[in-house]
Length: 196
Image 1: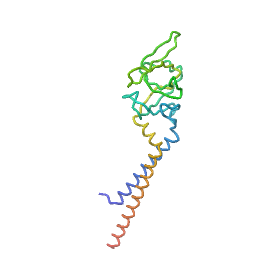
Image 2: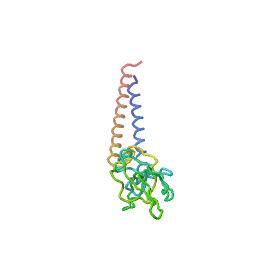
Image 3: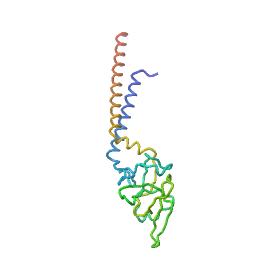
Image 4: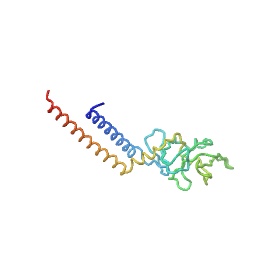
C-alpha cells in the first residue's frame, strides 16, 4: 500500500486535472460556444460546417430530450427543397423568425404552382405543426444528437455552478496542502526520533 505522501501527491494531481478541465470547459462554453439554444437565433459556434443547438422542449422525445444538444448541417434553400420524408430539421418558426424549432418531416407536399413544402411534427406531439414549412425557413438537418451535452454547457454558464467548482477546488487544495504539511512533519519527527 502506498504511503500517505504518494496518495496525497496523486490526489493533488487529480484535483488539478479536474480543475483545469472544468476551467477549459467553462471558457469554451462562455467564449466559443455562444447563443446556442433552440429558440435562439444563432447556433453555438466553433464547429466547422456545423451548428450546435441546445434542445429546450420535449417535443422530439424519445429521440431527442430536453437538455440534449443537436448538431445541424446548414442547408441552402435549394438543398432544403430536396429533403426527404423522415429528416429531422431545424427551422425558423413562421410567426417568429428568431425562434428555432427542431422537428421531423412527416410529409412532402407540392402546391398547385409546383412549390415544394413540408409538413413537420415533433415525435412526441399528437398532431403535425399547424403551418406548412417553406424550405426557405429551414436552417439545417440534424446530423447528430449528443445526450445531455446541452445541460452541461448551460450549467457551465451559470455563476452558481462555476462558484461551486471554484470554491470546491480551493477547499480541496487547502485540505491537500494541510495533509502534505502534516505528513511531512510526521516524517520529519519520525526521522528525528530514529536517527541512523
